[in-house]
Amino acid sequence: MIPLRDEIPTRRTPVVNYLLITVNVLVFILEVAAGDSQEAMFNRYAMIPAHFTDGVSLGDIGTIFSSMFMHAGLLHIGGNMLYLWIFGDNVEDAMGHGKYLAFYLIGGVVASVTHILSDTSSTLPTVGASGAIAAVLGAYLVLYPYSRVHTAIPVGIFLPITVVPASVILGLWFVMQLFDGVLALGGADIGGVAVWAHVGGFIFGAVMAMPLASGRRVESTRTW
Picture 1 (cartoon, rainbow, N blue to C red):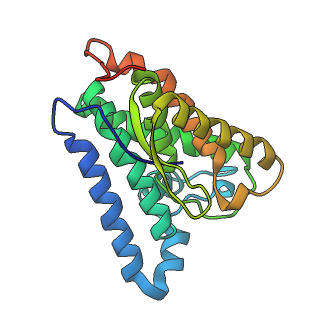
Picture 2: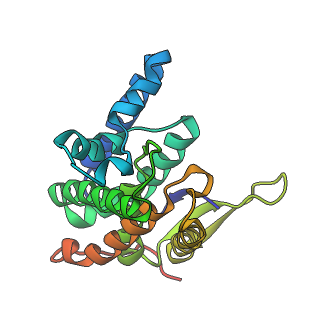
């Protein structure tokens, strides 16, 4: 399933969400521009779990944040930014700008730590915003479970568009990540994807959604 848009308007401009998308895109442009130096860039700024098992340095900690804004390819950043564009604005609307920024960054840290703990010996460079975005998805599911999400569902060579509740599309997404995570225990990441980072980020977002949105009116424009 490919989400395309939801039907919940925001009451304020999601400036932080726009900023996060912009930074991710700019960093990706820098990666592409690096050309043959891209591998060295990844080795320096990507997060490598094995580096956290002994003698952690400030540089290692810094890679948790730098890796959050790096991507391995056009499809990688395209998919991540699509999800952030659709679901991030409403979460920011519910939390407020400052709390949303802190939530996003801490969610990314939680996701990274979960990934490190899932495979402490991995020497594979890890990049991507999906851990932090998973936190956004978890929060959206809790705050807007009945939101109507226009979704493309591949059926053979066809791509019909239907409306699916957020609870279905995001709930299914989480179950798939958890299933893949269990399969990956004790082995390599499924398809090179740090699925436990997704699981950790999503759970963090779901748990912190209501406390951070406390005192703000959260509503869905449609119910099922």
